[in-house]
Image (tube, rainbow, N blue to C red; front, top):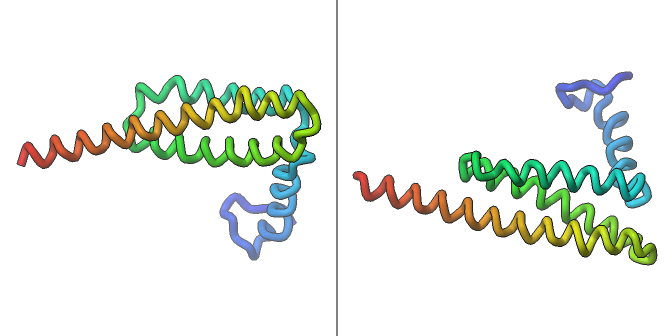
Length: 122
């Protein structure tokens, strides 16, 4: 039975797709340093576009990317014995997490400024 795009359990998604997804998220599935760095680079490219997004969109994107970075950091920490993975975690993932936190705070402040502007206009 093929997994369905609708995500209905009766179409095999729970049985077929979830174990596959869980397997891909296992720390052993960190395929290579290049694969992880490509994912980090993708997030950095998205981050560069935050200036042109609405603050609530920035907050949503920051939240999603932050969750993924935390997941990567945990998986990378499990491989701490390998120096190359520790460097990816400390020099790339943790820095990205700090910047995502900063961007979330900026966007949050912009939302508050807009709220105050609306109240003042009443």
